[in-house]
Length: 249
Image (cartoon, rainbow, N blue to C red; front, side, top):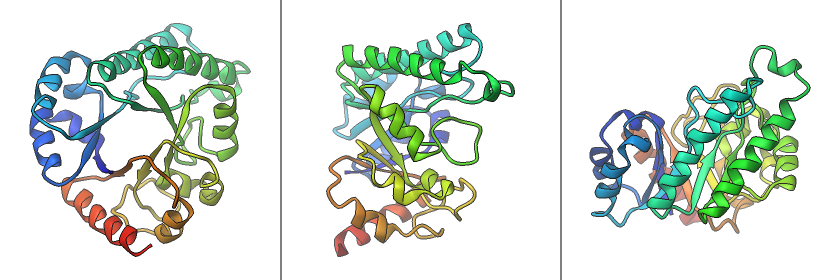
């Protein structure tokens, strides 16, 4: 299925965005923050009860850091993500996308960073398993100060934990290692375009990514394709590009 996603949608009432998306897409991966967060779960449940649209959740990430040097901040970050898992459980969501941690100014020099990240992901993955939800760890854009920008790093994490992989094509392209990322096996897929240097979230075909190569390489992929865009108009433009490309391959 082709789903839509835009984190800025979380500032608008859930039902109004849902109505716009379901007129144009088969589903929606929404960010569980602001008006789409835990405190609005009852309104979200009521809105979705009137729709048969496929739903995925992107766990919150703003102001959170699951590999913070501060153990209290790590715990608070984990708790916020677990709330998203609880929402997923209520909404019968099978896949929830999650970001890795952020390097704080001194974090890059702290020898406990990797351990903190792995322990946090393990705690969250256990909570996800209890709820019957599969985590999808997303690769991040380079050179952002985050973990998970390189395929070797993502592969190492996946080999140690019972979590899946969300392949973000746009982020992978900024790392210069898109083809290596394509050798991994994702359970979720994010699609947007850029110039190879900046995480621009352009419509598909407006940047430099060879999406024909990407789709051919991922011919056996069975999961959802989540288009990320800056507006509903750009999301629709990318959807038509993707559909045309899929029909020719």
